[in-house]
Image (cartoon, rainbow, N blue to C red; front, top):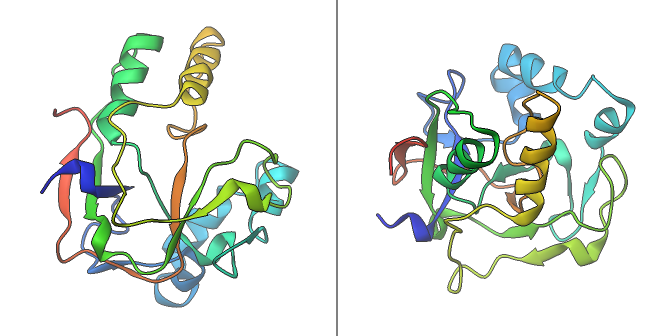
Length: 184
């Protein structure tokens, strides 16, 4: 399977044995412990608390009703941290999911609106599966983010400043492969 034709999602203890990825809102019913742990991440600032109810144009769903996938190959993020910040992040597995396995999806690239504010419709594009290619390099915005964090002696959201592929349909994992971002 070519990583160029995949989207990526972190593989965690909560989804390691899953047959499909589900939106956070579905976990409230199927795995209340995983839901509680995930939703708690949105309690740290007023902006992040507002994210839970942020409307996703084009999908007719809220932030917690969609699955977030990366079009940036995880290795690119790992390399950026190593190159820019001089940090070798620990092992982390990701699901490499063939883009053809997604249902209707959009690409969200936040560059006009701010976290917690309504998403500007110009930040959303329908995912063109036929033309899709993942990126083997991080974005300039992500590189700046990593540089700012490194200068402050901090670490933070790995994929900040990168686009995301969003879908509200469950994402099947029957064709997905597990990769580690440290391995080329």
